[in-house]
Amino acid sequence: MRVTKKSLALATTAVTVFALAACAPADGGVGGTDDGGESAAAEPVEVGIIYSKTGPLAAYGEAYHQGFEAGLDYATDGTGEVDGQPIEVTYLDDAGDPDKAVNHAKDIIGQGVQIMGGTVSSGIALKLAEQAEQNQVLYVSGPAAADAITGINDYTFRSGRQSLQDVATAGTFVEPDGAKVLVFAQDTAFGQGNLAAVDGVLGAQGADVDSILVPEDATEFTPFARQVIDADPDLVFVAWAGASSGAMWQGLDQQGVLDATTVVTGLGDAATYDAYGDAAAKVDFLNHYFPGAPDNEVNDAMVTAVEEAGGTPDLFTPDGFVAAQMIVHAIAEGGDDVDAMVGALEGWTFDGPKGSTTIRETDHAVLQPMYQVGLVETDGSWMPELVDEVPSDAVAPPEAD
Image (cartoon, rainbow, N blue to C red):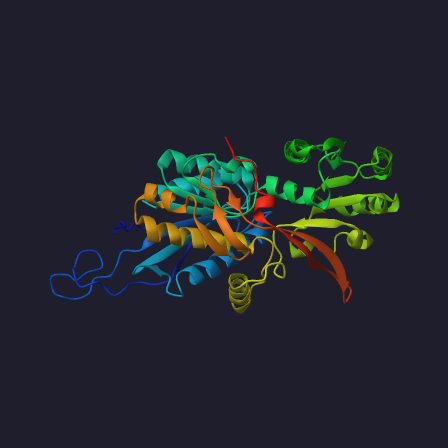
């Protein structure tokens, strides 16, 4: 397996070198012996990880980064090598800026890097996917949840869940066929996107989907909460972001919405657990991951590795871990042939932190379990508690065109 070593001495990057050389096979060539009979160092496989080290999504980026390092160590049995070749990782900060991310991608691709990974931002992931296709390099996106990433091109994969899997998990709290489902969201692209996803998934399962879209600058939520009561839905799917979240949940609780029907929303990272106030115990949560949800050896290994490195496993830690598993597998099976790497990942089933995980061959969706979760008060703080694991086939997204 031959990989050309390119310089990655970029002023703005930090390089993690997991190993510098490996013992060579006796037959010479790359990783063999030179004319003097001494062992020659194997050329490293170079990987560029573009993620939010700084910027508004830095906390998510750090969770991904911690997971990636733990996953690389796990997938290479602590050697940092694949078949004697060191994996050399360059971490680049996108700072949440698509232009900065694209510039980083162009730089490393120009230097011969054939494997990219990372980013929390869906907008950035879509831009990097374009670069992957144009330059025929492997790209494994990170926690970015946009459904459009799935199936976008032959060279782009993802290591986390997508929005359609969130919506399908919400649907497991009721029987969708014949149910009245109300989407309660801000009247923004984010809220409208969630409405479209709910209509596309639960509507296709027979649900009657309606919505209440609230102006983004709203600060008084009583009239909107009354609209929810009047609609008398079987399920309310809440999609909300930003500083008004606390006031919104308080408004729904005070008007009796949380007592009158099933209200479901996504459980975010640990920093959000206390954001629901008294409403926390009345809300049902769909969840991608929290450390206590899975019960398997891979998750145990990831949690231990992250904690021993001084980190804290969180919502997007497994996305980094799985990305490392995928990249190591691609290198092991595909060598320096990108098309062979792609073929190695398509249809691959493996044990990840969330259990059995499959990369769907047709569109590269990641088929994985999801979780129903509740929040319980413990020593004055709210902590997640697993209610049920939802099997991967029950929340598999429709195949992308």
